[in-house]
Image 1 (spheres, rainbow, N blue to C red):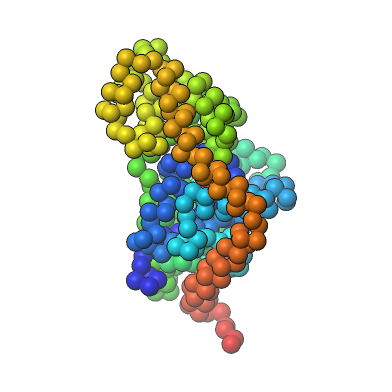
Image 2: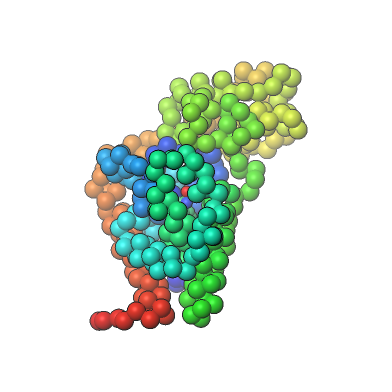
Length: 333
Ligand code: TRP
């Protein structure tokens, strides 16, 4: 608890290429937490270097990710937005927690298995201990709730296990966090293959709509979206492409499925795809404008980073010194 509020923490990798799936399924809803919770949103640059990064790109993407979050509605006055490497306690706690995490547990992580298959020439120790750093991120802030995608569920479970284990050895030290997985309806599928999730690393450029795509690109991608051959705009089993487009349209316009069916009764897929593209482009235009404005104001972004780091550092230090005391490290004033 901080000032009587429960705590939310989430981390995002510094990649500017967020998709409308990330937007509708996660970021857009993050701002809703800030009334009820004390929220920390962290750009996890330490995590990013578990795979090889081009230094200038990593730096640029760190700014971009922060700017994008603010542009999507996360107000830095109401949320603590910060960069992981600016708060040394993350790396420090990760070392200690490494010693309370089992080799076998980390070996079972599916993301480690996937990533080591994908980066076979760089299976570094950081890739292996990645979930321990993530546990440290979460546990440092005595987090109650962690909004994450389903793909991070296993890491979150591990964070809970580490917290429970540490508390068991030394008495209560960490809050045991709960995950918050967005409702399934929020899952946005690929435009090229509506049976698989829209993924920012999809090699097919037409499958993915990025938050920062231009209006023309957005409309072109929706025009090419894969549908079916029955020409009816109706939410139904087996109509994965249309269902996905209807969900996207619903998210951007707030209309219910029954209203959408009525709106496009007797119309063709071409008209519908254009309408979805336009609704999406119109909703994202202000986000893109705000993003560009923020990226042109580095001094402002650095001010946000600094204020966020100061605030995060204060809370993180408190937990870290508690942990060090319990472990038995000597402390000097
Ligand atoms: N591993 C998360 C991902 O790739 C990012 C992350 C790092 C995170 N630390 C976190 C998410 C802490 C939630 C809480 O999506």
